[in-house]
Image 1 (cartoon, rainbow, N blue to C red):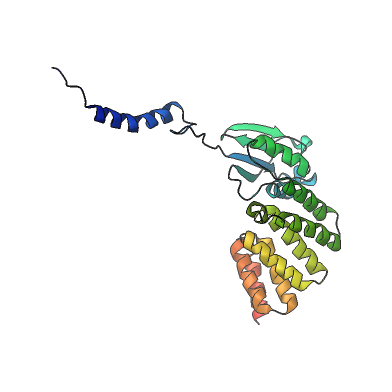
Image 2 (cartoon, rainbow, N blue to C red):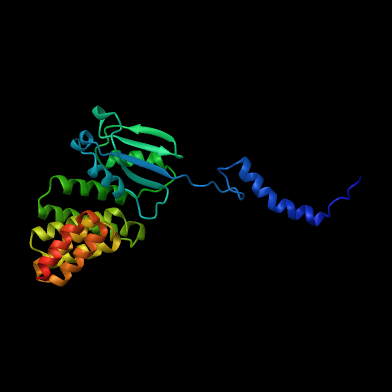
Length: 255
C-alpha cells in the first residue's frame, strides 16, 4: 500500500510544534528559545548551639539576608540543624541545582558571607551598599550603645535611600536598620522617631514580628493605647507564638 506525501504546510506546522518539545527533551536546562533557565540556590545557615555561640545562628542568618537585594529571585536563605562540623563553625551549606552541596566553615561576618554569595550566584549583583550596611548592622547589634546604634543605622538608612533604588529601599538590610534604630530610639525616649521607623519597617516586611512588638511598646509609651492594640494584633498574626501574650496585653490595654 502506498502513501501520499504530506503537504508542505502540514510538515511545517508539525515541525513548529515538535521542535521546541524535542529541544526540551534533549536539553532540559535550555528553553526552546535558547534561554538558560535559572536554578535557585539555597544557603543553609547552621542553627546548632555550637555555631550560635560562635556568632552563627540567627545573627549570621540575618547577615546573609541583609546582603541580598529585594529583586534577587535566584537565592533562598534558610536555617538548618547541625551540619556535623561543629569545631569549624559557624558553618554554612550551599546547595545548588537541588543536590550539589558544598560546605563553608568559619563564616563569621558580612565579608565572609558575601564571599559565599558570590560563589552561590556569580551572575547576580550584590551592591556594595548592602555589604557596608550589613557590616554596620553587625557592629550595631554587638557593641554599640543606643546612641551609637542610632548613629550607625541612620548612616545605613541614608545610604540605602540615596538613589531611590527599590531593590535597596525594600531590602532586608533597610528593614533591619529601621528596626534597630526604632529600638534604639525607644531606649533614648525618642518615641515619635521610634514609631516612624517601626511603621516604615512594617511596610517592608509586615510578617516580621519584632517590628510590631517595638511599635506596640512605642505607641503605649506615647499614650496611644488604640495604636498599641492594633500593633499587638498584627504581632499575633505575624508570629503566632506570641498570640497568647499579645491577647493578654490587648486585654490589659483595653481594661
